[in-house]
Amino acid sequence: MRGRLIFPFLSEIARLDSAATAADPDGVGPLESGYDQDFKETVLLPAGQGAAADARKEMPALLLPCQVEVGSFEALQQLASGNSPTTRVTLVFHFRDLEQRGLVDAASGDALLQVNDRLVAIRDQAGNVVQAVRTPPGLYAREVQPQSFGMGRTRNLLIVSFEERQQGVRGP
Image (cartoon, rainbow, N blue to C red; front, side, top):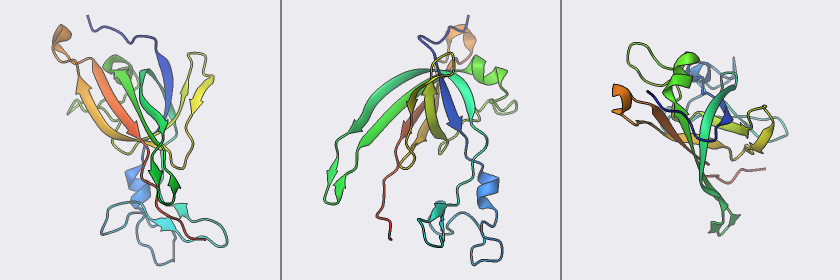
């Protein structure tokens, strides 16, 4: 017996494509990778007249059943430059659902949901948007933790905590 999710929703998640992000993002331009060599963060691509675009590349979004636990949602965090609201949403996934979708590595048993994957939206069982996530700032997986070891001699749950990233000041 492996249990089940309580009051499941569908999460829409865009997984980070590390290999595509690491590739040369500007062809003949000065960049050699989508990652900064020193900080190991994605770089901003130079823009002509508009805002710079992030070099981050994502795999196509997927829908996964989950249980939603909201820690805080756009709580006030006042800074000298204005409000920078904080949000923390925790999604609980059942390993059975991940296994059925090929999202568990057969050799290691690791879930293929990773830190830096992005939460796009939460949907009801019919696929209707219940809560979309504005990007930027976006909500990104900050912790991916297997849980519930022991019930039926297997693990049942994967708990993924999503938080917004700190926003820096962007130039004109």
